[in-house]
Length: 206
Image 1 (cartoon, rainbow, N blue to C red):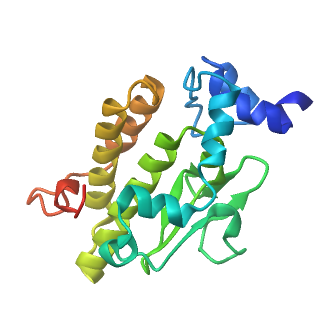
Image 2: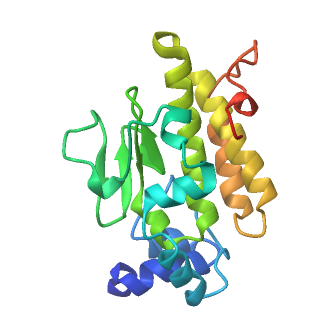
């Protein structure tokens, strides 16, 4: 209903467990994967917003002051800062606060030139959700920088999803099992690098 479209509805949907989440967010969030029972209350969500004054500052805190040179990041911006037509096949849905691409909603995207965009939905989630999404995209950015024209998107996706899975397991008190299952089902669509060159543990700081 209309309540779901309000700011309060959006902020609290993380605190609602089960299937209500998809309705509250106003649609089909990540093919029906909903985040249930992750926020102890509205105060926690508000606290998460307060802590994210700057995406750049957050990246520096979690991944090092040199994250741009270390991972080949040309720019790091919120999805809402993405200009129309800037990234082929992708746009920003302000109602859902998500980047939308050919396969549906995306938590983040990384271009071959190292431009990283993160969906604004993470402004209202606990910090762990922003950290795992940002880490996932930095792995892609590093692989683009390291392998250049030989970049293999399947290997990079498999590796980045392995990071997301491992991070979720370590932070299971915040990131619930529905997210873990989502990362696992996504990873199954890709192939792992038989030589292990794309292993995310080989990415500096991971």
